[in-house]
Length: 402
Ligand code: HEM
Image (cartoon, rainbow, N blue to C red; front, side, top):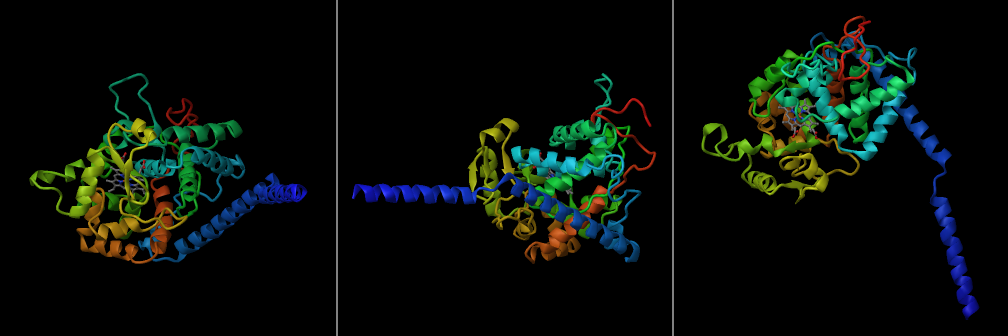
C-alpha cells in the first residue's frame, strides 16, 4: 500500500514538473514573439502611410480626410540614415517606462495636446529658458500646464536616443513617437507618426495662458479654439474623446457642484445621480475604480495629489482588453460628462450629432477617427528643415544653433 502511494506521489510530481516545463516560454520564443509583433506594427505603419499619402492626393480640398493628412515637410522614417534604431529605442524605452507606470500613456497624450496646441508640435512646453531670471515666465508654468505629466519620462527617452545617436532626434519627435507608442500600449489605436520635427527656441507663456482650452469653456469657445488650429467640429468632438482615459483632479469640477456660474445652483447639465456620486467621490478624497465603483485612493495617488482625484471611467464598463472605447460619448448622452467642457458637446446640435454617432457603435468609429485626428494633431505647426533646432536636453535650448 505504502509503495503504491509512493509511486502515485512520484507520478504526480513528474506530471507537475513536465507541465511547468511545457508552460514555460523559452527566451528565444519571447524574442520571436516580440520580433513578430514589431514586424507586424512596422508593416501596418507602412501600409497606413501609403494609404494616407494616396488619400491626401485624392481627397477633396478642405475635407476632413485631406486636411488630416498634410505632412508639412515631415517624412516617413526620417531618421533611417542618421539613426536607424531611433524608433525602436523610443518603443523599447517607452515599454519599459509603461511597465512601471501604466497610466503614463494618458499623461503623455495630454502633454502632446498642450504642446501641439501652442505654436505647433515643437516641444516648446519643455523649455526652461529663464537663464536664472525668476521673473521670466515660461510655458510649462502657465496655469493649464501645471499639472502636466510625462516631461521627465520624455527626457529619459531622449537620453537613450542621445546615447545611441547624439544630437540627432528632436524632443518634438521623441514626444510624438513616444505618445503614439504609449497609446498603443494602453490599448488605444495605432497611427503612423511621420518624423523630422525640430524643436523651438522659444517658450510661449502668454499663448499657453490664453489659448489652451479651459475646463469651463462653453462649446462656442471650444470650437473656436480648435478651428483656429484647423480642426473641424467632428475632429474636435473626436479629440475630446481622449477624455475616455486618464484621471481628473476634483479642483476642475468642484465649481459645478454649487453656485455654478453665479446661479446659486449646481450645473444644470449634470445628471443629479452623477452629481451626488461626484460630490461624494471628491469630498471624501475617494476615487473610483475602473469599473466605476467608488474606492479609497491608493497611497500613490494620495502622494501625487494635493486633493482628490477621480478616474474618468465613472460609469463605464470596460470591454476586455480595450481601454480606448466610446463610453465617454455614452456618458455624455446621460449627462455624465466630468468637465463642463465635455458636457457642452451636447449643448450644440452639430456636436451632439457627432457624440450620438460615436456612442452608437462598439467604439470602432471613434477609434478609427481618433487615429486620423492624432495624425493631424501630431503634424500641427511643425518646424522642419532648417527651422528650429535639435535640443540635447529637452528643457534647455541648445547653445549652438545649427
Ligand atoms: C476643450 C479641450 C480640453 C480641455 C478644457 C481639457 C481639460 C482637461 C483637464 C482640466 C484635465 C484634468 C487634468 C488634471 O487633473 O491634472 C484633462 C485631462 C486629460 N486630458 Fe484634456 N482637455 C481638453 C482636450 C483634450 C484633448 C484634445 C486631449 C488629447 C487628444 C486631452 C487629453 C487628456 C488626457 C489624456 C487627460 C488625462 C491626463 C492624466 O491622466 O494625466 N484633453 N483635460
